[in-house]
Amino acid sequence: MTKASDLVRVDASRECCSSPWEEAYERFETPEQEIAKFRSRLLKVGAADWDKNLRVVELFCGRGNGLHALSRLGFQNLEGVDLSETLLARYSGGAKCYVCDCRQLPFQNQSRDVIIVQGGLHHLPRLPEDLDMTLMEIQRILRPNGLSVIIEPWRTPFLRAVHAMCALRIARRSWPKLDALATMIEHERTTYEQWLSQSQVILRLLKNHFPRHTARAAWGKLQFIGSPAGRS
Image (cartoon, rainbow, N blue to C red; front, side):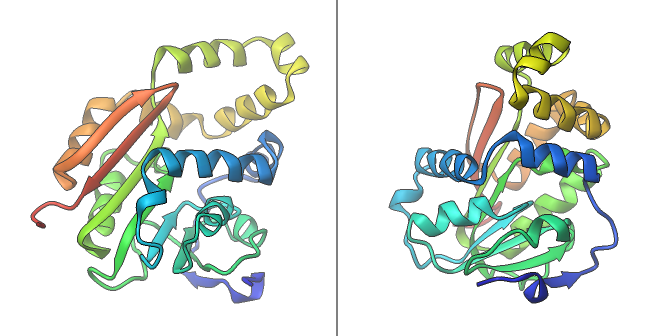
């Protein structure tokens, strides 16, 4: 089981999120609710049919509930990466976790089979530079026929409606989950709005790095699944 003392620290001098953000994140949903959400997403992208011996890395893994979801689906060769040592310390499972920057991953070239991101790229401080660096790293460490699964916020009619609700104080007072979401948005507003306002730039970079891909935007999320450029 991974403990705080077992975390591998690699150039983690910068935190992507403030303590208020982490507190709101803890309030947003329980660990079991988040695991169920991640499990549902993984099943929708076909994870039930993947070889369970694949080496899978989750970037921006936070408190590790995506890793728990993968474990419950039968995957054993799991690793997690996040900048927040506080969140990673909450994870207790079999995956090896690294406190490090996604723009400089501590893995060898073409050494991993699947890279998963479930809501972390919109924390990157600079677009398009940081996104390009992160995608290059993902591309670098994926094996031939490797798979990149990216799920991020996306400006759809549903998300616009959610944002409108977040602006209503009475709605926030009566719905704690909405208040937690609004608080997270407030503390990541610069990078969040930057991400939502550059959809064409983001899609172009994703498609350039992963030309074999499928992309779908619905219910406030972009689901992008791709394989690296120049690989058969």
